[in-house]
Length: 320
Image (cartoon, rainbow, N blue to C red; front, side):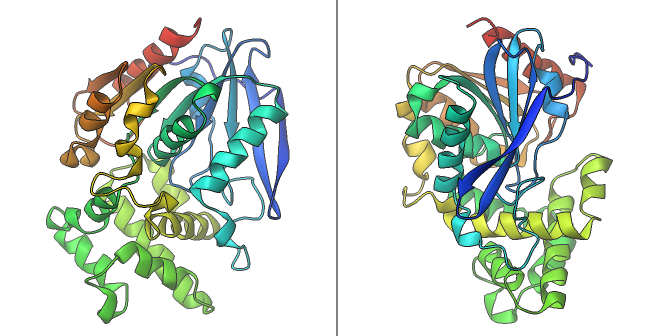
């Protein structure tokens, strides 16, 4: 695979971002290199070491962080008493600005995967002067249509798994917003209710998004499973906290605001998000963006072909 060698962070810390939250961050590569920040997916997955290898460590100062409630950030979303009302897209965007200033960075390349692409796009729309370029993969925009596809529309492709998933919520909620229904179960004071809901949610995610063994294994960790399911349903059940954007959603509606920010969209041809044409519509609405389609790949970054395309994108912007 065309990846750079594995490297370790040369600095890390916990940043107090308010509301009782401390966000874990780390920096790798060249302390004097081009700044880049990595936004993980989920929401709630946490950052891992793999994205470090997508950047030339001699040329990039690579910043990774665990978003609120995820990974090593505190308090964890897996804890029942963690206040999820202060975990929204607006809070995550504010955290990025705090971290950027804390690290003394003027502008940085924003790299995002899946929900990280939602966050990266909205961050760039809100703070265009802080973003030098965008590299996004597993592209999503956080629209209601995308949530409906992933929680209900794919049921026709995975009928047996969908029947179990739908049966996991109270009967009178099975024809409504399933993400919101699961979110309510995950806020239940009863531990058993929360545990069953977390398992049902992650079973559905595993069914619809073929994942490498490591990702599936993470769902066997009760704390990770709970924190992940609680965070995803919190966002998906509340429109990603993006506000009203009509049928296309806020991020796609405001895509023309990205004019002047170069960007590369690296998308697997078999990503189920493509069924709505979101990545193509985003590309055509965003002046100056580049769309790279990787054949025979789904919603993943871990194949050789995806790695090659992502490294090519970061290499392209390395000296800009």
